[in-house]
Image (tube, rainbow, N blue to C red; front, side, top):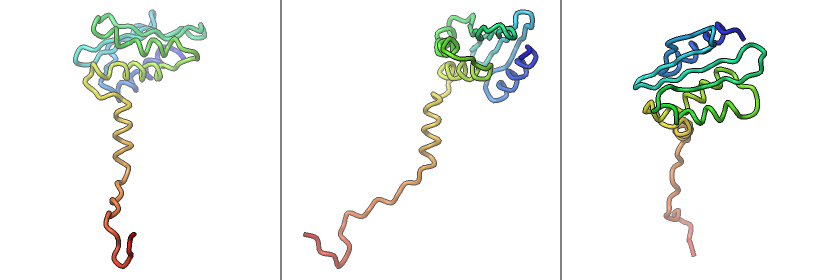
Length: 131
């Protein structure tokens, strides 16, 4: 995928997250992202056909520890798309952004759809003797 296509993917991803794509550098194949309150990172995109992985990093000492999850994901087996990498970064930064953990969201959405049943009456029905 050429760099401009990757930048388009990044712009689309940003429209659904608090992040902004604040800079792109085609010669370095680098994209810089930022979100309030001071959460920043960049992605280095692999060259076409060279087989390298994406690389994520932050120059902010506060942000860097949160990228470990995304870095582990990228280095795991299998090719990753830019969208998959960005989603993992977003999940990593949720605590810094003041957002609940993504797994908590899924549980809340699921439990909101569950209908609560009426509790069964503890008393015996009339006309039926219990022994």
